[in-house]
Length: 278
Image 1 (spheres, helix red, strand yellow):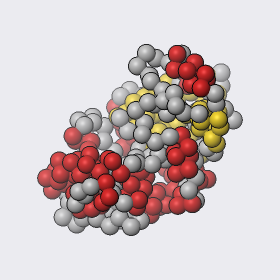
Image 2 (spheres, one colour; image 1 turned 120 degrees about the vertical axis):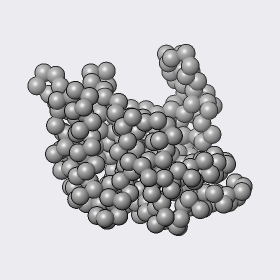
Image 3 (tube, rainbow, N blue to C red; image 1 turned 90 degrees about the vertical axis):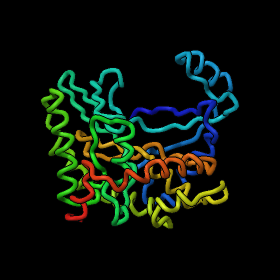
């Protein structure tokens, strides 16, 4: 299979080795089979310098790094050969169809897979979608309800593609792959919520880096991973399992305070549906 390398930008606080150690820690043993077979390899500084030189002008690499991550490529063909459909910031469809060869891939962020407080009318994912003015919002809490919620989630993507003029059928493939690999959803849910009951209250109560415990940082890391569903290969993979530093505590707290009133407003969120079919 093809390989890609991942390097660190100068703005990244954590090193490649720290990221690699985090990804390979035993806490994620249940997710390792879905990761991109990460390996860490040393490279000369000249390699990083040359890579930055050949990158766009606004890309600044961390030249102190002496390692890169080597990962499996999620694409079977050159990325430039795919037709890319951005449904939103969090949902992208990649389509390859040339010379009798086809591949359809959905990349998305599951974000927060959790059980919101009973008083909430809108989940955290949908509130964020409202604040970011996302035209397409597909509540990922639907993925916690099998089969009804997953069917609705897949159908939402199908309808959005059709509304944008794309005559492709992804519903059947999406549902089939998620059904077969549903363990990844339940595992992500379990790990996100481990030792973090009522995450909203936890984040609002933070007052220092010391309050942002390892369990909280790990939970927030898993709430920002990406998932890739390859309809052609009947395969699911996890990307971007990166550690979140406790220095982010203030950002997390401020975002929760900003969101707080919106949780109690009725919206297009599928929370009621999920409660009925949970």
